Length: 263
Image (cartoon, rainbow, N blue to C red; front, side, top):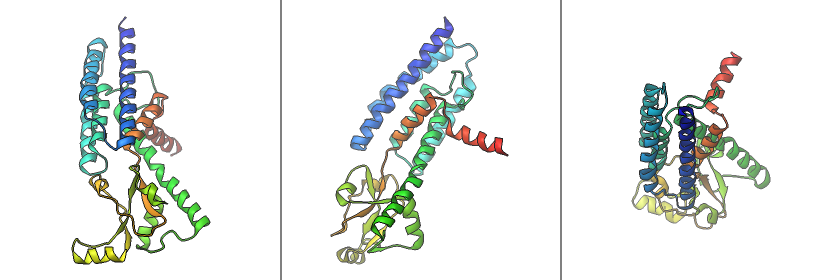
């Protein structure tokens, strides 16, 4: 009876996480905003389910669960205040942590810290954008020629752009799913910058904080293509990372084990 109840609660937790991540991902892709009510409603429900799970599960690893929640919360706030992702992403991690802090289903491939498995999977998946963008830019170079005509940039900036950005039409660049990294008028605010803007001097701003994405996009006059970086919401990578975790994939654990076995 207790085992059946545990299984039921575990499945409810998984379904709750799935439903919330799907809804949040849809909202973020469509509007670049996630309604805070999602977390306000879902997190307490998840926390209550976890408490019920604790009281109905003999030998529930309470200290491990508390450590998982504390570590996840610390990482969520740390990455947020570093400007590497938005507040909704931090809330998503905290929601996952209170809903399923530890993975109690039989598994030899997942870390017991379930929220960190999802975080690790999501971060690893987001890094796949780097080689993908490099391939896209190499194909552009072969088919169309120069990638940086009319742009003031150092060799280092150009190399980084190959791994972090791509060229698209201005109409595509204005989409909420892309951040403009090709700017006009480099320099401090004032007459000098305005003069640079009037001349249409273009440069690359490769590293943007979350707040920078709220800037009004200014497309260089006459530009046929501009440099952008894909703005795939991190919450989408969390969702994919969650799906991978469902089928027993923990990218970080698998990577560590691969290197340990090879040494």
